[in-house]
Length: 93
Image (cartoon, rainbow, N blue to C red):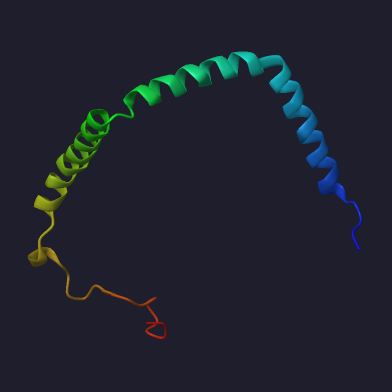
């Protein structure tokens, strides 16, 4: 047994608003999304994927090097809590 509520009215009004927005701007949006899809499709080659992966990994490796240089076990405060594999209460491994 179901009955309608305020959520149903707001969902219906949202659908009407989205329909009107798509009717007014949908063609322009689809045009841009189609050109974006064609661009992405042209990148989806073996060499393009490898190049993207190399740039991605190189960026994050370059970003992590300065952080790794700042981190030393000698800087670790022994009074600080270190939890490995627990939620901090030691009740849930």
